[in-house]
Amino acid sequence: MKKFIYIVAVSFLSVAFMGSSFAGVQEKQQQLQEKQGALNEKQVELNQAVQKESVERSQESNKSMQQVSRASKIIGTKVKNSKGESLGDIKDLVIDPENGQVVYGVVSFGGILGMGDKLFAIPWGALVWNFDKKYYNLDLDKETLKKAPGFDKKHWPDSSDKWERLREELNQFPFYHPKG
View 1 (tube, rainbow, N blue to C red):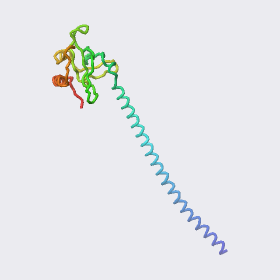
View 2: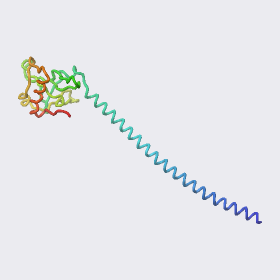
View 3: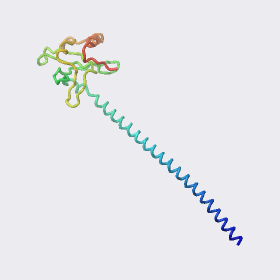
View 4: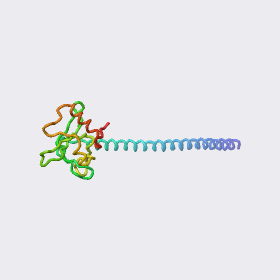
């Protein structure tokens, strides 16, 4: 009988000890599951951030590509003001040879059938491409453009000093908004 009591006591203690050990294991397992859940949430957040960054980079790349165009596609494009009035068309582009950037769009205005046109060196940043209607917008009315400094087909500025002087004269007009 002593053996029986001893066996029952040992069995009871074993079950009690194992029960508390099992409870400890269950608690640890629950903690690990909570940590795994938190890690999964962080992984989802990181994946979303990476995806968002990828979309933003793609959009920026598309925007950049939309801002590039061949000179042959730009030359001849109409220029209108915000009222939709025609201000002429782009006759040429002036490029800074040091940095390769377009500095001016040469806009032809006035005259009849190309005769008597006055040319204007409009800062490139002042000409805004209208994607929907396929023309450049210049925030300027016709009367102001008539008064702006310009030149004729036979007397283009032939030096950077003359282009610079034209640019300085344009400072007085509302469309001149240099970039940077």
